[in-house]
Image (cartoon, rainbow, N blue to C red; front, side, top):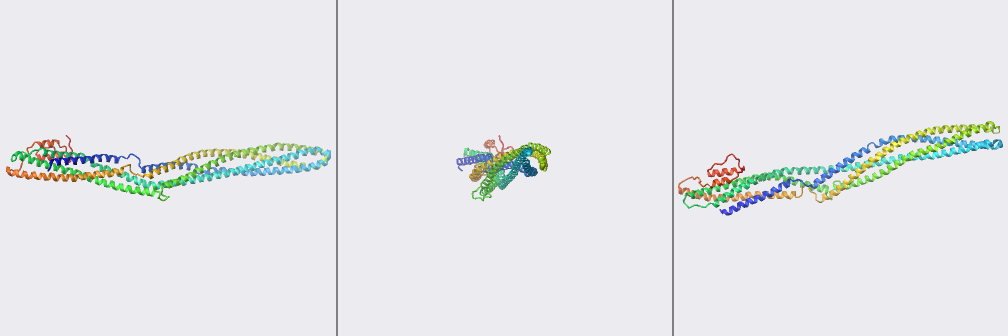
Length: 572
């Protein structure tokens, strides 16, 4: 055996072993390091944010739209009752107008009679002219009152129409919100399951990597063992054969055989370490490879199903997000319509209140006219009573008196109705406008939430475009590092063959010396020899693995510490 070459081989094996363990020592921790976000994690986080935003927005939406009709329908029931009051008011106005027309006709007939009476009827004629003028004023104010009442009714009907529009707008908003929420939940549900499945597989790979990493524990054992073998070979190389035929030669041969055997024992241990370590690695690494294959298959399926441009629209995340965004855009437009209608609603409520006040102002003009009519009626009665020339108009005067009394009674009823109407509608519409204003504030807040969520959707779609470009499920370089780990561990496995080859060389060399020993035993007439070379003590002193110290002591016939398990390292 070429000892110089053998020493070189041992150093080479040791160097290869160190390189493998050095690379593995760097690779394994980097594989277990989960810093850095993968595309899968980005996607998961994106959908978590979308779901959180959608849930918050949906809660506000439900709180705002729930029982909205029930909230305001009582108002319109009351308004319908007030419309009935307006119909009654309209009847009163019609009665007053009719009375005014009758008064004017009676006044005209009375004037004709008074004119025929000549000078004696002049005073009555002037009184009757005033009566006719006041009757006309009564008619004109009643007509004006009728116009204002008609406009008030129009505003009330407009209010009902606007409110119906608001309810429709709210229904549309609620429907669009429900549709958008349903689409988002459906999308999240579809995507979450395969994402969770992949994440579960990804999480399961790391314990097996940690178990495979246990082979690194053999590094010191192998390094120290190779150092022991190298020391044995170096010792053989440094020893010089004594003169032939001497006991020193016999001791030298027996010492050299012992060194060969010790080297072989250590080499067997090394192969055992390598074989044992590789078995542990191989068992766990097969699990790693199996999981990686499963994850890669799931990744490709996920990419094809949800991210590919060729995926069906109902599955493609980007297409579905675009559809949801388009739906949200329509919803945002509906918010604009809603705010516009709400402004009209508040304006109409103000108009109703203002128009009711105007009606009462017009009504106030009727009272002075009625007072003057009473005065003229009294003058007319006095003139008829003292002027025999116009006794024939007595019946007309009585009819006029009855008409004025009827008109006055209608005015009293009208006043009571108007005062009740104005008080009730002012209170009712005041409460209504306060409630509408509060709803408007809530709607503005909801719109802001929806706008924020809308922006998150668009941001998510933009983020998705980046994810699609390079959809990763493991940190950067993870798979390539796994390939490198396997290559290095295969390199460690290859060391087993090199060590086995070296063991054969050592065994062959040992056999040559054993033949020489047999020859020397024959020459000296002995069958056994106790080695006297003290170098064995030095070798044992420098061994760091207890089992190897024990093997050396046994071969040399010296005592060493006992009880250490094979492969246990004892540092001195």
